[in-house]
Image (cartoon, rainbow, N blue to C red; front, side):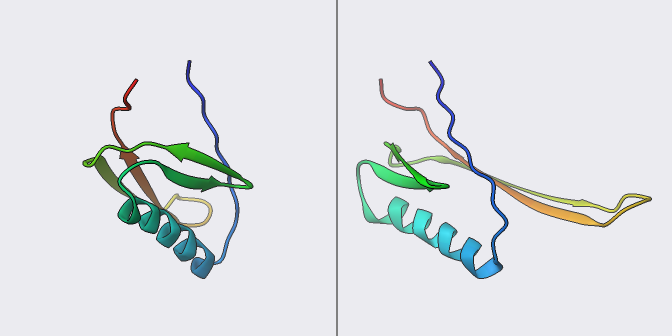
Length: 81
């Protein structure tokens, strides 16, 4: 069974930084479960001591319309069953 919880928001840069710092503090501060805020919910996860970390940066300048830039960050690990 696959469960997915997601949330999309428009936040200030400062608020995004605070969200990322909160996640970093969870990863840094514990050796077991971490609580990840997803919108108005909290999801408890159990990351391994080492995780896979991928960063992708995209810059798009279409012929018509506004230039778009994005950063995608993926942190993953094999979960214990």
